Amino acid sequence: MSFLKIRWAQFLRELKSLGLFYALILISGIVATLWIFYQVQQKTEPRYGSMLFIVALILSIHLNRKDHRFIRLVAIQPFFVYISEYGFIAFIFVILSFLKSNTFTMFLLIPAVALISLINVNFISNAKSGWIARMIPASNYEWKSGVRSTGWFIPFLLLCGVLLAPLPFASLVICWIILALSISFYEQGESREMILSFMQSPRNFIVNKAGIHAMTFLICILPVLVANFIFFPDKWWLGLSFMLFCVINIAAFVTSKYAVWQHGQTNKSQSVLNSIGMIGLFIPFLLPIPIVNFIRNYRKATHNLRTLLNDFN
Image (cartoon, rainbow, N blue to C red; front, side, top):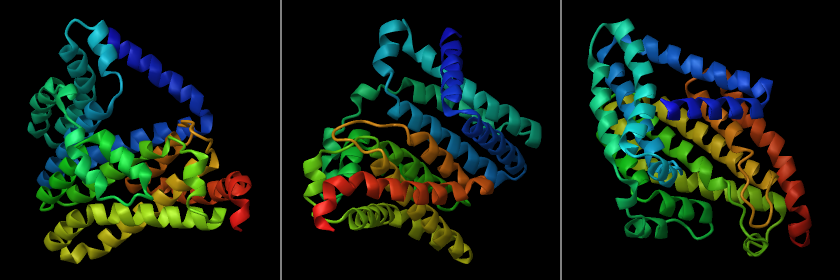
């Protein structure tokens, strides 16, 4: 319970740091997500799909959180810390599902949360997945580094996306989770020498970088998109729309990185805005945010890189 209080205090602190406008957008997004979840619980297939999404979300949080060592140091039984935090998240969705459908499907989340809480992240080896990173172009060092840091998790999600293709929208949601994970890939600023090695003007550098990253991601999720098309050929336009959504967001990620780029510095100031833009897949009124972010940050990025790459204009 004390850990839940700490998490609540951290959430409020992050909310205050966003400012009133973006805090309201984030709260509206959370409320809208819960409302959409509540509405889809009436039918069986969306109910199972949403349950699998929550399991994947909690698993993603568990495998990517950075405080495992802290929890092991301060908690006698880390398992109870994990299960209390994940159980709180799952409990909200269980109640909403039961109120709408009067079925016990979502109660399967309870054993799923318990199993996830038992996973010892230390035993997940990233080194063995190095061959996956080697398949990514050297110029896309953000994704090479990100794939190494996440280990087998992204291939695992891709496999889940293919296996869940018979469920409506499930495979696209899995691809969305992979794209959301990639936001953290753009927080570390590379050295000046790495940028200079491209020998391109600021505009060409940004455009080519966004193109390479978008192509890398689309090739990565291609098996999932093909599986989705096989089961839902009449919904082909959804796959194309999703691809466009991904390309726009990746372009926004790239420009947001270089709008605040500094030599060898980590900058997470853009991650919240990029995350809010990602929610637009589920909340239509947030869809313009990635486009606005791209336009706003494109000019900042080219200006920020002008001094470094001015000789290549």
